[in-house]
Length: 96
Image 1 (cartoon, rainbow, N blue to C red):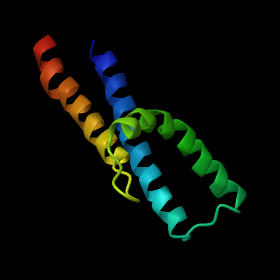
Image 2 (cartoon, rainbow, N blue to C red):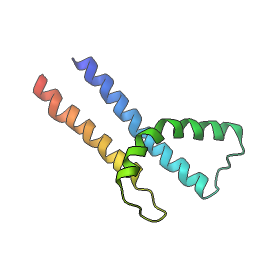
Image 3 (cartoon, rainbow, N blue to C red):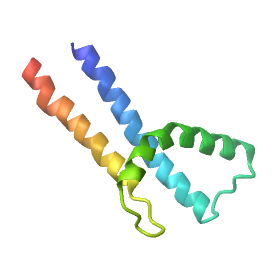
């Protein structure tokens, strides 16, 4: 059972870091610090977008518009942190 929780913890932690990288990359591209004309940067950016955008789309439909700000990654990070806490600190000790 611990192996299953370890796997879920790894996936949730990887998702957390992926969303953080998505936010940082979107800022860097938005402020034109990195250029998407570079092939490697464009591939990394589109790869991360293709992984994170399907998780952000339902949150974006629910959240009201905040002008030019997108709070959906913040909400996703809060959900991921909640799930990690729920799994590791509440469910794992109860099953052990």
